[in-house]
Amino acid sequence: MRLRIPPRALRGQYRSSRLAGRNHTALIRMILVAYWPEPVTNEEPAMTLIASAETARANRRRGSAADGVTFWHTLYLGTTRYNMAPGTPDPAPDALFPMAFLVEQDPGSTANAHYHMQDQFQLVVGGYGTLGLHEVRPTTVHFTGAHTAYGPIKASADEGVWYFTLRNGFDPGARFMTMPENRAALRTVPGRLHRESVAGPLTYPTAPAETLLGPDPDGMTAWRYSAGPGETITGPDPAKGRGQYWVVTNGSMVRDGEILSKLSCAFVFPDDAPFHAVADSNGMEVIAMQFPLHNILH
Image (cartoon, rainbow, N blue to C red; front, top):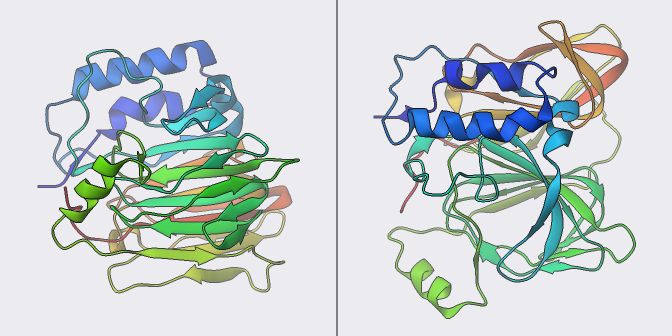
């Protein structure tokens, strides 16, 4: 059985930029208490989740990881260890649970190599640096499968590096390879495969729709869409993957009458209709990222 948070529970705070920022975290905590750990089935109607950059900005706060790296952290969708109410149980590992946040890693800092329990896209949208052996700057798309060690992430000394972290399942936090117990745990994961893909830094668009990563047989794909003022885009069938993120990287788009500026994002459930939006007066550029269809190993 596939589990996910019911979209009716998330609808209010993510579809309207009018929500006061001070209520955002409290609402997330109320949702977690109300809906976890009880499972939710596919009988709930799907609802695309929207997080505007303006609304998310109220959640910007300082953060640090277990390896000491420091950053600014801005929650967009879901919840993380930084804002969960004490005693709240983690969502089930196989639950479809969108979590999206923006990391502004401090200039000159390094996040050591690590892995996560969930599949993940990272989208570099500001500053520059290196991710493992890869140069990263706007716009770079990076995918790692669950239990794939990657990094380190080294931020430039003058600007740092900014990136979205986008997952379709709850993850309790990075497991750093500097810790022997994390290396040992990784070796015990049955059927584990190292899976990593990178596209970018991207140059100027050459077509209205471009495939950046994939498509892989299990549905993992990333695209870039570009549209002039008033033009529309319609995304691929989300049923071919396990959720899609859409992030505005330039310009702004209009969705259901709401203007979504640069660095706004959306999560499209597999049983949603294909994503549809209209470019605002300055046009838009959007990166779409689709998760693979497979069971996460834990």
